[in-house]
Image (cartoon, rainbow, N blue to C red; front, side, top):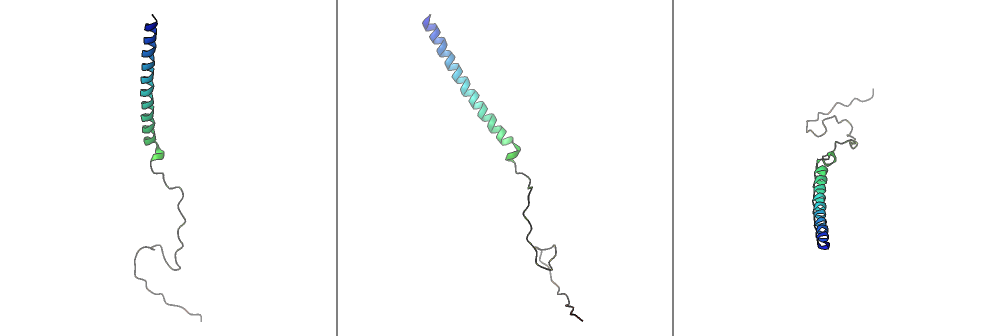
Length: 78
């Protein structure tokens, strides 16, 4: 009778340990899936843009485009 109780307890411990290992693996894989599926893992939209550099005087919005600059006539004081 004692051996039957001891063997049942041993089987119970083995089953509980196997279940704990399987549940632990399942939780870690679920957590990994959730972590990959989180929107935080995706690139976030830019909410703050750095201030633009001031343009030199006389430049227009075509700052980076090469263009021919025609000198303007200088009007002197009369």
